[in-house]
Length: 290
Ligand SMILES: [Zn+2]
Image 1 (cartoon, rainbow, N blue to C red):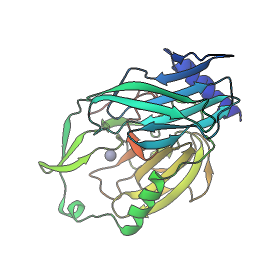
Image 2: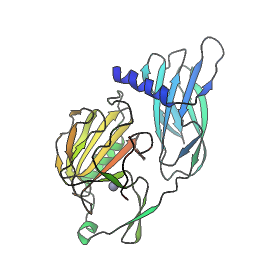
Image 3: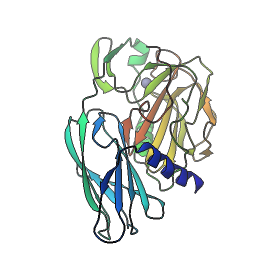
């Protein structure tokens, strides 16, 4: 429970500017969005709600999709919204509701273009022949659909999961041998020597820890409440599926297994299945070596 309270406290500190909705009658309802006005493609929105009355099954809706708001402590709720890096810029509505009717509010947020550069990757014949197996595709799908009740982590910002420098940022348009792959980079790459420890960014439970064809040695960790982290191309895996991991616990070692040109850690952070930029709000500043 301590961690949950700590998360709530963190959110309150982080949410510097509040969007408040005053209600008639006893007490006030306070709804806070961080950021509250503009958000970049690929960025995370932190939602915090304090109400005078308890809520029942509170949810928020974004683009016709419902997401859960989680109970932090008495009459306080939180939710995370990951903005897709390909989301069309414009003004969007976030509506919030619950079964009692105590929550029936909306907020508007402007999504702005995140001008991300392109990156060309020299793909070897051997790499070009690599495709994802059915098994790894189903595991990734399961990972993206993982939303559990309890937050198992500590407060961001976290330490980088591996010591090294970032040589590929989030959201880059990926070209393979000069041709657009149709993909964008769904995480960050941390360049490091083979064998450098890879650590869980914060506490959680291992969704899978397996060797895959395309992703290589892979570990996915469920931190709870829709937050999941993925670590791939590992040369060694130190954890097993279903195991609880502590913040900073070694889960494996940097490698170049799967679709990789050299040793590095590809680290992805997902919110309700949407990859977000982990370098905005989630980790402490890291060295860039692009
Ligand atoms: Zn990568």
